[in-house]
Amino acid sequence: MTWIVDEAHSFGEHDLAGSAGWHMSVDQWLLDDWLVGSPNSNQRDDLSFVMRLYQWKSPTLSLGYFQSLAERESHHPSKDLDLVRRASGGGAIAHDHELTYSIAISNEHLRRLLPVLTNHPSPRRKSIEAASANQRLYGAVHHWIVETLAGLGISVSPYSDLPRTLVKRHSSIDVADTSRKDAHPFLCFQRRTSDDLIISGYKVVGSAQRRNRFGVLQHGSILWKSSNGAPELPGIADVSGTHWHIADLRKALLDHWADKTQTKIREFEFSRNQVSAIDKICTTRFANQRWSSKR
Amino acid sequence: MSRDPAALHYADTHEWVDLDSDGIATVGISSFAIEQLNDLVYMDLPEVGTILELGQEFGEVESVKAVSPLYSPVAGEIIEVHSELPDQLEKLNDDPYDFGWILKVKTSGEAPSQLMDHPTYQKQCAEAG
Image 1 (cartoon, rainbow over the protein chains, first blue to last red):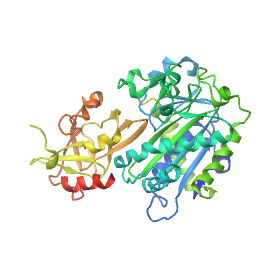
Image 2 (image 1 turned 120 degrees about the vertical axis):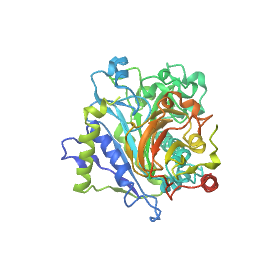
Image 3 (image 1 turned 180 degrees about the vertical axis):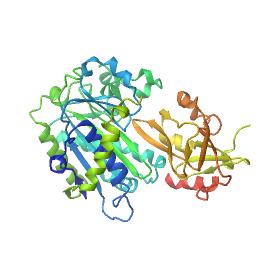
Image 4 (image 1 turned 45 degrees about the horizontal axis):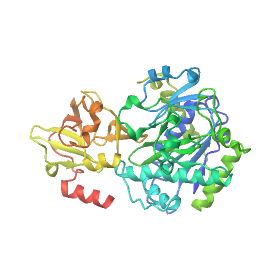
């Protein structure tokens, strides 16, 4: 079963719904609470995970978990955007005209999902132990996105499949080329790792993870159009000239996911207590200025 | 003197423990874990004086855009942290059991029963692939 979160239906009444802090809090709750609960188990026979496909109420700059707040000063176009610190790694993202996905999955279900999305066997279980499987999740999910975009007539490719001369011409840096952290560009979409998705030399899909002993949360941005908060980064629609809209992409992703995983997609119903728990994460962490400025 | 990996205890979350006769546990992460995590770029360490419960998160690492917690394989009070380590993570690959120590924890003196000896841990790693 794939549980999809209907953001408006689930949280529409909530004051914080759609805000940066709320989005990060829902993702964190899925990892820390939902995954530890009933679906995190070897007891369920079916593949089960929760997926979100969401957009942001206002343009927001998210920092990677270990990024310094002071680094923000280096990027003027995003200086007036709202700010949130993600629990996941990587570089900063200007969330604006994009579709964001997140998926929370237990280690056991991850082991079973990967062969469905790809043909890679991945028998892993525990936190660090699952690192290789977790890393394969980047490629597996991105493969689903590649196939979905292809269905819309848009061709994107993993960075690892492309000649370096093409993908390095836009002031990007392959993070594998240097161990110097200070050499990594501030923006995630100016960094390159092997599973990042590229169109005409520009990175347009990137993902990051937060793990615990039970499983992994992976979320990522599908950059659709350029933002005033990061005008140097064109989106898929800018480069491809496609007439499709983000809503079309969202529907296509869900349809293809259902086909690919052969799972039913049902709306995830949040209880009042679950929403309260998310609210607590939001106020104490992601919407809390002390959290955002902790580094 | 170099620490012998075969003489250490291991948690199923891949932290190693060297417990001395005074009950001081030196803690690090195994070479298998370092290899699996692949290219560590950041590490957060706790403060001296922190009281850890068995299995409690005591730090975090980032590798390939993924943040993972580190879990304490012992209970007790942190009496020392390897503060130079986060700035020299590249050395972890070459020397996970000596330079790569992370914490020293004052424990009750007995290794938790959940910890594995080296052969058992190696078997777990082999089964994990």
